[in-house]
Every structure is written in structure tokens, then in C-alpha cells.
Length: 374
Image 1 (tube, one colour):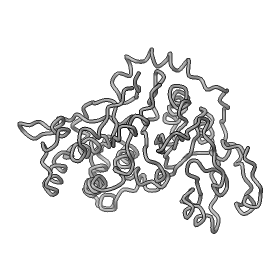
Image 2 (cartoon, rainbow, N blue to C red; image 1 turned 120 degrees about the vertical axis):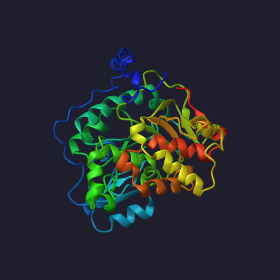
Image 3 (cartoon, one colour; image 1 turned 30 degrees about the vertical axis):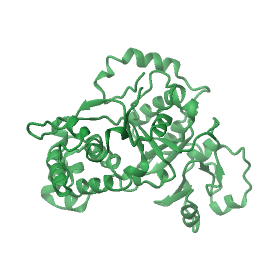
Image 4 (tube, helix red, strand yellow; image 1 turned 90 degrees about the vertical axis):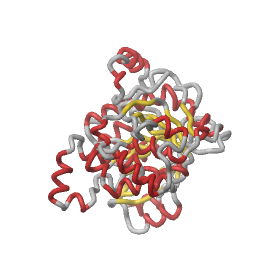
């Protein structure tokens, strides 16, 4: 059982198990090699696409790879139908939709008619070689060990991917893949980027700007992304994480059956230098909102009673499941906006797992939080 992540200290000790899983987890069919981007599977203009009659047997993988050019009128059609959106001059479909106007439904490979909820699995990746190599290894294991039994759609958040890497990701496994562009991933507020002193502080942080952008994105704005609006639950997965053994009992189904809001897998401490001033600002927020730092059973797990200091333990969210309607509404988003306003994600690398832990502790009763058995 378990989820092996590159961020967890047990990586070396679990190497032999991981290598064994890798040997057994090859995709059911050979993965095509794509050193160069394949041609986009569409005519040059979307108007010509609309005129064409598309059969149900359309190559869904080709549409998954395609980066569709935005033309006049398409944005309104996609966004009003809530089947997709346009940004930065291109358009993308949301699960389960495909095609030039997101008018085709890619069916699931399993019978999900018994489900009275919707769920999605998601990754966040850069266009860098390490991340692409990692996700290319993670996806087939995800399919073999878990998703072949449930076939939830997989969304890949990114801030720009080459056509070659889109091709590699889609053809890495049997998972149904959708790409979702993140507009403001590296949009540092001007109060930091244009002030010389604060700009110097930004440059002194040892974690890359991209990593800090990831922490901010997964702390709050991820839950507001249009691609997730049609789903009840979302499972977070890291590109360098793997299931080493089959997951025979669906944790998302268990979460729904138990009416849980947050599901976690393991606890680990964070580095004090990575969350500098995070607890002090959180205490200020609690005072403004009349929340006692020892006022809930969950907070008392993470806060020392004698000195009201956070013990740096947190829910590790290299794998987690959230009930989306709670995380995209207040009070959670109010807490995120407060933290975002003081710039700690950019200036100190405040982690999304820290935000998640304290927010859950402030507002969720214990019977709404579930430890998944994986």
C-alpha cells in the first residue's frame, strides 16, 4: 500500500519496491516515442472544423494533444456551454468533452452509472525534462494500480507545454487526459516585483519562483480553476509520486460515502525556514476572526498547548482528496486571500500543505476529515 513521492524521506528505502513496480507497470500498449511534435489533428481554421461531421470514433487522443487556436465567437460558445474556455489565444475543453467545439463526449471505460458524484484526478507540471520524465512514469502506474478500475478523468495543470511533451503525456498511459493552462502561475504582485527592496528579498529565496508559484496555486487558486467547476471531488497527485501496489478500494468513493470534506494519507514536519512567519500571520488572522488557536481538536494536534506554537507537523498533500465546494468557498478562500495579501508565498515559500493543515484545523470537525487507507 501507499503513495511514494519524491518529496518523502523514504524514497531511497523504497527504491527496490518502486523499481519492481516500474517493471510491472508498462502500459497495455507500446508508448509511441515523439521527439518532435505531431501535427495538430484539425484544419487550420475552427470554422472549417465546425462544418465537418465528426464521427463518434474520432481519435480522442489526438484531440487531447491538440492546442486549438481561438477564433472569433468560439470563446462565447465554449464558456456559455461550460464545456471549455479560451485563454492566451487558444482554447481547451473540460472533461469529458473533446473536439473543435467541445461537442464530443469521451466515454469512460468503466460503468460509472452507479455514482452520484463526480471526481477528477490532477497533476501540476512544468515543461521541464525532469517533470515530464516523472509524469510519464507516474501515469502508467496510476492507471495500472488504481484508475483502470474507476477511470476518473485526469487533468494536467501547466503554464505552457510543448506539443512534443503534450504528446508524451497523452500517450504515456490509458488515462483520459485533459490539459488546463494556468493563467497567473508566475504573476508576482507589483508591490514585490517593482519595489527594489522587496524584489531583492524575492531573489534571495532559495526555492525557485516556479516552486513558489506552485505553492500559491495549490494553496487556493487551484480550486477556482474553470476546469474543476463541474466536479465534486479532486485528488491531488505529484508528478514524482507513484502507487507501488493496487488500490482495490476507491478512496474517493469512501470519502463520498462518509460525507468527508478532506482526506489525507500521511503526516510529516515542514522545514521552519520554509514557513517563516506563517504561524505568526495565521495567529493574527485567528485573532481577527475570533478563533482560538487551541479551539478545535484538530488544532490541538498541531499546536503546543504550553506556548501556542505550531509544531510544524502537517498533512502532506502530495496525495490528498478534497471536497471542492468547501475549498472554493469561504471561509477557506478568505484565509487564502489574507495570506496571499501579505506575500508569504513569494517571499518565504509558504507551503500549500501548511495552509491546508491550519485551515482544516480551524474549521472542520474531526468527523469531516478522513485518513485514507493507502
